[in-house]
Length: 189
Image 1 (cartoon, helix red, strand yellow):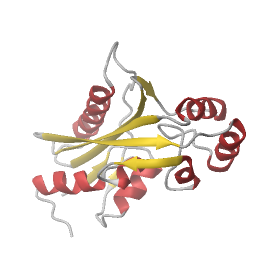
Image 2 (cartoon, rainbow, N blue to C red):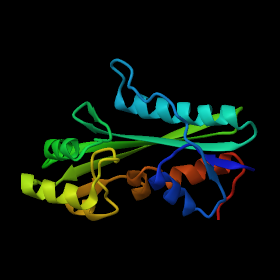
Image 3 (tube, rainbow, N blue to C red):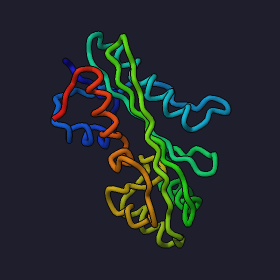
Image 4 (cartoon, one colour):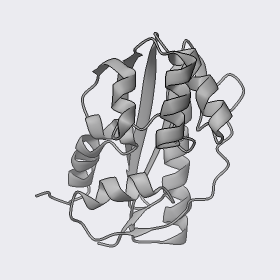
């Protein structure tokens, strides 16, 4: 079966490569604007579903994988910061606090779509403005929900991380994905 990752993210591509399956990538090019009053869980599930369907519509017969992720701090959704200034501001808001990182994954064959939500509870250490500035200069996490790269120096920002799949923090929950792929007849390993 032709497998397509509905993403332009190198992080998701690198994660999926770990499973050893051949796949192609395609940018789903959807509007990711949250709907008015949309809860973080609803947002990530809706976006991963829309991404999967958008690419599936272009590739009939393919098996499409999509994912989305947001950080949530006391009800506020934190998107990819986009700039070092916004990354520093997000990290300052999360320093010494606990936030949730929500990662959704969807798989569709065009006829059927299944999805899962992975939630991590992440507690950051208290951080000085100087420590935050040094971290942002080092990892440049402007393209990451929550403004950190836990797979790099960002691990040092945290006092604790609670969740089922550490790979989900990077953007693609592989444990959930393996279960979903099995439902579509893809057995690993």
